Image (cartoon, rainbow, N blue to C red; front, side, top):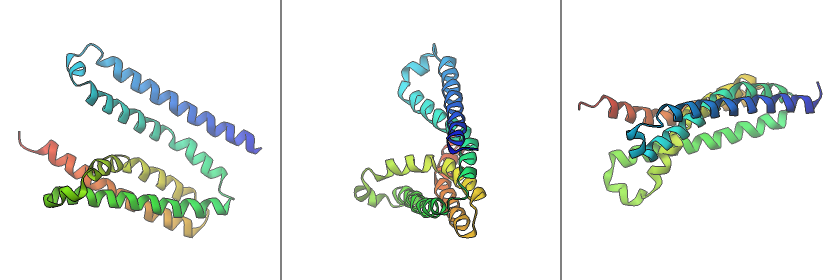
Length: 176
């Protein structure tokens, strides 16, 4: 198969993922259009809709990403660069998790951390999706070294997601 045809198939997969994410988000917005709570808390609903779009697109984009990675298996330089890049990116997730817990457990550091905890939460929210993407990358890696580095990066991303999930569980399970 020619490279242009491969790129077209992958692009069509991403287009389908985009259409699916837009459709799901549209249906969600339509479901609460006349809801007075949605009007009163429009910012919260908008953030939820944005998260729904990002995660729907991210999950739907995993198959075309896997196909693109399959097509890129013979390109060794790509795998070396993506493995190192994944480790660097995953380290930001670990730092975000540390900042998140430092803010909660050490309130005296609040003045030092200033606005970092807000970005830390946003970084941790995308960690599960990045973890899934790294696992898909590791599955298609042609050699042992990039595969190992991608698995290490996926573990770091999973660890970055854990504090956010734990804090959400504490909020939802707290007695009211």
